[in-house]
Image (cartoon, rainbow, N blue to C red):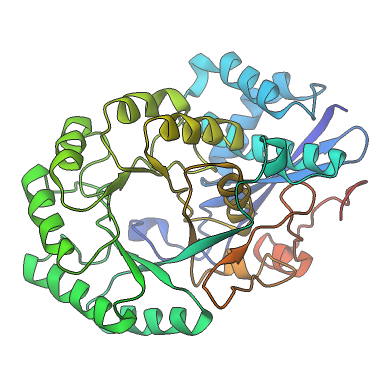
Length: 383
């Protein structure tokens, strides 16, 4: 079975709020792009890339000679060849991001061909359910509290709040936000904090992060995410060694090689690769295993689409060192792209799909709504 065509389905019209510069936030903003791989036997797979159609299309043009006609059922081999053959063209950047979506789609195809969920093809499933944490933006205006209450009503029993004014106004503001969030969710719900240190011109260093981690300990914060600039390896190593609560990071890194020093030097407690940027399922699973060998927990970064969430669910099923999955909410690129809604158990856990490939069904109306009328190609094997 060979790759015959690559299709791009850029998502527009519902880009979630985040740390974007206002110049990027036009009505037609495109920061997520679906990739469809079509084979010569009519089987198709879908992936997702956390970058714009413009960059993905350019990357596909570079990769095209190494894509068409190659195996569609050897995802790790095909993806590694793409990495190797594009070394000088964009290693770690847009080309690596594009390979991520291709790799996810190839695993989806392999799952459909074998009739197995991706997690079983990765070696087996350690779990059938996982706790999702609702990923929300901070605010000092009451919106965060309303979002937390809505999340509790939906069944979430873990929340991550981040960005907004945190670390950008004053220490008193930071503490007031955390105190308010803890009061809303109560003592029995896990609460994580994301400073957003990958924001442009992040001003804080090690001492601010250490002092803030001590404040967060008073509110039983589960982990402190991105408290430093994303390239500050030594700062993270010191902070992880001295912080009273776990430190998480690495969501902006790509390819497994970039993660090696962070893991080997134990610069984080929880590693957070993004499957739609890091190189896909093939790369992310290797990172998770490397982290597990060093007793570092694996928490996929999931500021993402329904396709990215589906990939994350398969990864956390197959990874020994997984306890949570990130769930961006509310998000039309998740909720509206799924044919069946995701339902949480009374314990606040998600059932991990066990259908072939990614194991989820896509809503054609939702895809058409956010792609200007585009549709996925009908697959010769589906479920």
